Length: 384
Image (cartoon, rainbow, N blue to C red; front, side):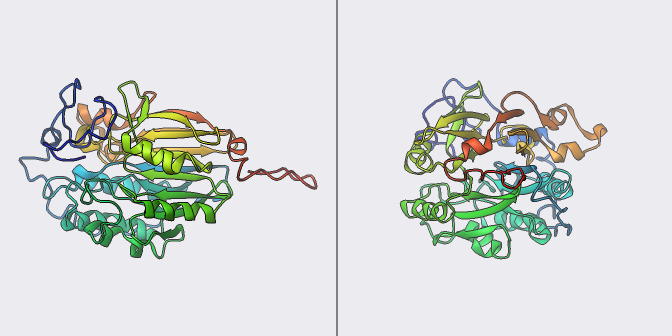
């Protein structure tokens, strides 16, 4: 969100929506400042950013082989990492740990894709992007499939995807993904991109949309869907919904526009993922075709260590027709128990309905309007 003094929640519908600078809003209980969170974690006062922590070349790793035809596969989601890349304050080690975990478990978890939800950095500075860009090279070298998108902290927040050049675009623009097998292209602006991964024996389309996609940006996104009329679509963007303290998600003002102008009109979109606000939450909305769209808000930057690059695992199970969701911190999991303080112990994994849950999703029925299951022939069982 915007800095202190800016009308940071003018576009949201509820004073209970928390934006991404740890402000206080309305009747929200006071929250720790960013510096307070890092001070508690031992990052401030002792050289917040360990020398070389974000500039060391990541170890070369190779992604474990996943089974593209197996009925169970995992989509990994990573929200706002901005406090880990904030000028000379922060620490890249939590992100490094999460990326290593993804590579180490890509085989046993059958991880097919990683979606980052924006606000990679705090100030959108070239130095910050150089640091996080270097961290992500471990995925590039391993050939792992992933997407990123610009949040309001990554670019000038009062601009659309027509803003032109930026440190974000120079770091995570089309050139970076040109060799990726999952990369399906980007719009002329470079800020909106499309990715196709294979899971459960079929392709799935991920749209990574800018903080503020323009009419031209949405027209490009529509053209991608039109070119792939039989693919289920997951829309990722930085702002779409916020959640109340009960974990019920609601569309923000901007989110309502994006829903009306794009999401609700495309029946292929069955899941949306965004960061930006906290607490996390979810809801189910009906699109123009009367079908369910699962709307999820995921963000942990208000937690200890700025969220510690926590990740959410979406385990798709086509056989059971459900998605099991779990939220973990590879960084804190990887610390020896003796080195974890009380706050760190709480971050190893998150439970509760907002962070650990299952979605019943009858894939063949939900996708029947654009990808009907073919009838079984010659004794073979029809497969989704």
